[in-house]
Image 1: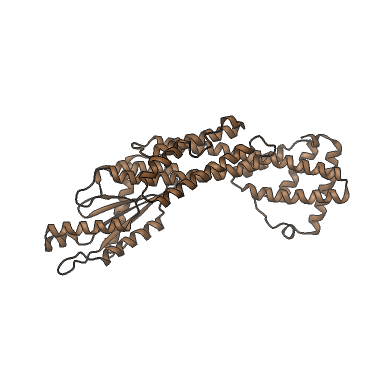
Image 2: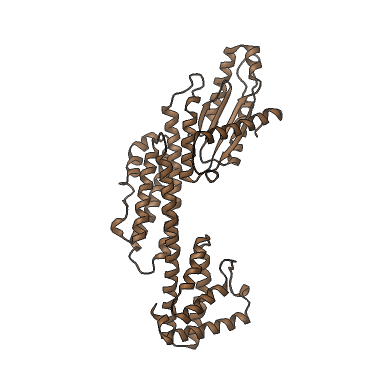
Length: 425
């Protein structure tokens, strides 16, 4: 940096930093600055600036910023602290030096901020590239991709974006028109026909277009000087949109699964023979979208007594009745399997443990509140076991893990039975 390489420049900044030190002693930091952090401390910032003045380079500052970026300290926090320092020192220059000195000081701090933002951007690009590669790996491992092939193409689109930003090449940017990328083409054609709720189509289209708008903005400033900070912020937003889009595609994919896989003829639910495959895929999708899902296992209480008392024909009517309640209660993207005779298993995508408990309890109350039409009315109850599958708790997916998850859910169901039935555990 040219200003560090001039004796006058270093002397100017040294004097201004001394004045800043004097001000710090007169006014404690907590009175001067609204934000403080154990990771962003004034002594560290001042020490690295003094070393830059002494040596004519900012290597220590860069090491400090790289550590901050690596520890996920928000860039805005550091930029705020550094900006307050910059503003105070520029004010000192305006008060006690010349306009030219103030201008040179401002330029120096702007160049330093760009260097620090570039470090944050480089660290984030490395991490985003790695995360995106892992997401692609999990999607490519799916035995049945269906609509998730569009998420795969989107992740490939993201990979091109990461590389284009890394080399700062607008010519290498991915397709910027949301109507012309592979997902946009599908959404505006077959997707519109598949999704029954047109308000949902609009929501997905708005999400997709918002992500493209962010990427267009990245491309528009790619060649600008001191653009690392804005590009970093926009890329973080683009990744958030990307994950949301992946979540939406995975929910739509479940709708396809419910429509094309073989069903149990009595209840209309998926048969158990597809369960392992669906759960393996769901665990891969959870890793790709970084969203937990939950499994709910439930069965009808004392159902054997229903069959023994009223006969198997009434028992079948009871199962059909409960299946109708389940369909009316659950979401279109929830996958329901007939696990056994009167036992069912629900896969709830993008659903936390607390949300799954709420969903299960809603279903429990609905079953208890709607007796089967019979003379007299046949009151039914059900018990539920719930587990959450978090993508952060596993790396690779296999059928052994699937069986462990089912066993844990089954154990919770039997705990609900032991505690008196008609409850969620």
